[in-house]
Image (cartoon, rainbow, N blue to C red; front, side, top):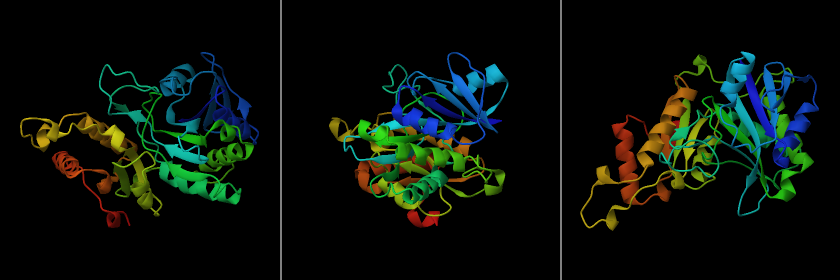
Amino acid sequence: MVTLVVATTTDPASIGPAAALLAMAGWQPGPSFQGIRSFVNGEVRLLEHDNSIVKEDHLDKRWAEFTSEGVDEIIFLSRHSAVSNRPALTLHPIGVPHLCEGDVPPQGGKPGWAAPPSPRIGPWLKLLKRIAESRGLVPEFEVTLEATHHGPETNKPAMFVEIGSTEEYWGRKDAANVIALLVWEGLGLGGGTSVGSWSSKKDKEKVLLGIGGGHYVPRHMDIIWKDGVWVGHLLSGYSLPMEDPTHSKVEINAQGIGGTWREAIKVSFEATKAAFPGGDILAHLDHKSFKSWQKNAITAYLGEQNIKIGKPADFC
């Protein structure tokens, strides 16, 4: 079983870290397939293509069919864009679970789908901050998580590792070197122990399923920085479409609130459960981001689905 690290030549924040990683010891040329080049180092396969990073679907399945090697996980290297233009180093799960069949995802993926979130996300966030601080990128660069969003589609645990937020920073060699070191150390390529692997020995450890808040999930982040907290999907408010019952002429209860919010929560919970078998998955709500009718509806639905709700103290 191997780990795929995926980069594209069309993105300086993707190919820069990939080049820095390939400059480290141990890499050998691997097979090429479907216009994609590969490089081999132990149990890691770096794939390099020339297309949009969010459009190359099912690389796990395609690699397995071509090489007969099973794929454990996929790590995508990419750029991050933000209105703030603030330099940032970010990680996030992927999926568009709130979209309906027939919707066209603006950045890849399949409507109603979420990949299992990589169990490495939480541990790698801490590792990324440590490396960025040691290389002098903090406080210039913010180290943070983003909410679940975009493709490409895959059925294996996945995450994006990104450099943001403008062209000025996407090509920064110091940022590229930090991301390369994150992958190098995080996957144990230097001979050390890999960081963030999940196993049955971690049975019943706490896994946070974030519900609500903004794109950078600040209230969930307050908990995620704690030791021993694993990170599942992070659904921001825009991934929980809810129809306001006050707009109806007929009185409507929480059961009748429309929108795809239920589907988004269910799909994200199931994907998180698949990524952390045996884990104690707790939904953490950003209460301040919801109106009372929204919070009541979500809380009731979580109860119906037997999804436990965790307060900050429950993650200690």
